[in-house]
Image 1 (spheres, rainbow, N blue to C red):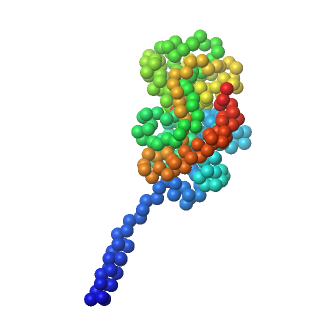
Image 2: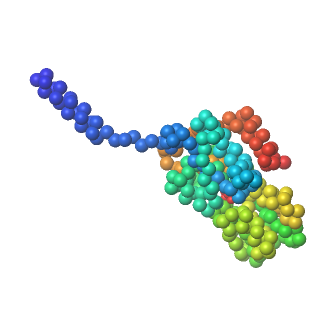
Image 3: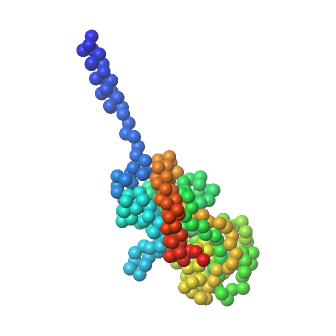
Length: 259
Ligand code: GLU
């Protein structure tokens, strides 16, 4: 009898061991095991993500991402950057090519349907960059004219709502958009003031019109599944720390994001 019970228990043990499912690892565990953070960043969006003279990625978003690597993995060197554009960043995140995006990305209701966002780490607002010779002063003046937007950015929606008659020309990068404006292909670029200002600072023949058409809270984006919950908590923890210690503010000053 005793032998039978032992045998039964043994069978139960073997059966349980066989059917025991692998518990799926959440995003944070995968990152910790890999020992490296893979972050999608912009490489043509100064002062957030761009290349210095040596070709290295630098900027406010890049520094923020390094702080995340330091907070999560103990070293800001444990990071790999993957350049993304406004139009391919969500695909690169959803497909698992990157763990997160620190890519001038605004929190919007539409994006919240498919992604999770950290607490905001910067606030921008949409504005228009024009040639100084232009006599346009506000969005309504562009009715029937041509305006440039970056594919996948929030500005297209703003234009469709405010100036339905405007002709919209889209480009993948800010580099191409700026070149097109200078070549006279359009009357202005609609994008975040924080990004457009950089062109106005370097080129005295263009300026940013004073009006702002939206509030753009920049945040780190992660995949929506519940397995990114702990990762999001870690990101928020780092951002909160950077805010509390004044480091985030100093980073904004360094990149001239504060007036
Ligand atoms: N912040 C805006 C957005 O998320 C525009 C900046 C960008 O090109 O990413 O769409």
